[in-house]
Amino acid sequence: MFSVKGNLMFRFVVFDLEVCGGILDQIVDGYNGFLVQPRNPTEIAEKILWLISNPKEAKHMGMKGRKIIEEKFDIDKRIDRIISLYHRILEDRS
Image (cartoon, rainbow, N blue to C red):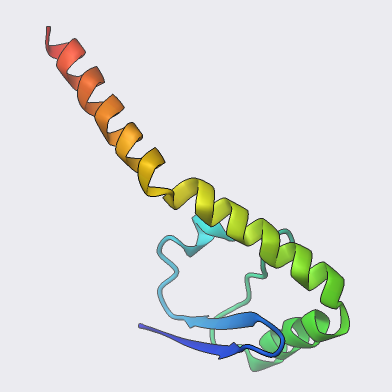
């Protein structure tokens, strides 16, 4: 279970995750977001304050995060990967 709290004024989202499945593959701590210990309000607050105090870096971090998501989850690329996988499977059976 997770909850998402967003602040559009600062354009960031804070995730409170009990189960982090998949998130660790998408967020590189300090590069395109921050990883914090679940239910650690002090650590979460520190990262939020850093984002507020460093708007340029926060924007760059968000842009990097968007790029990763667009690359990993682009529907055309995913379809191409699936088709390629099927071709490899069929070739291995031949």
